[in-house]
Amino acid sequence: MKDGKVVSMADYKRSERVGDQIRMEIAEILMTKVKDPRIGFVTVTAVAVSDDLRNAKVFVSVLGSDAGRTFEGLDAARPFIRSELGRRLKLRFVPELSFREDHTAEEAEKIYKLMDQMKEPGS
Image (cartoon, rainbow, N blue to C red; front, top):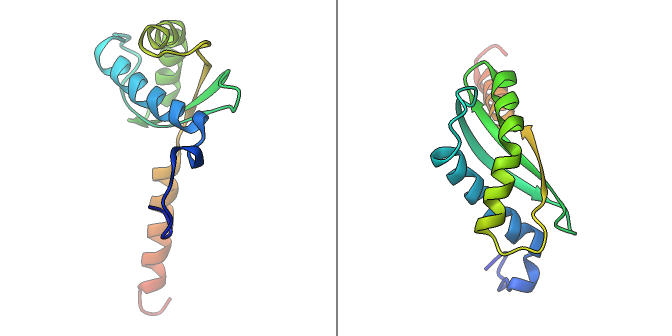
């Protein structure tokens, strides 16, 4: 249910369902199959798939300071990850992947700090 309404599968776009599945599969592939030392601790936070299912933006959160090196490793592993997705998913076309850094946690931290500053007396 969403906002008091029953949500059917028709209300949930296919590209969103595919994106959720791709997110889970890529997280699994990164944990178990990819052995590139440049890829540190990453969390796949979201996947945005185009409506035609041809392109997917994979948003990842990188723990540590060397995000550039991590993204080099992810870019190098992209063909392998895509081929693994092809084996695991029943899709006519496996989307082209592009990795993007997710800054949501950093933005949330900034907002919390601003809220704390507003609470302080004399502000």
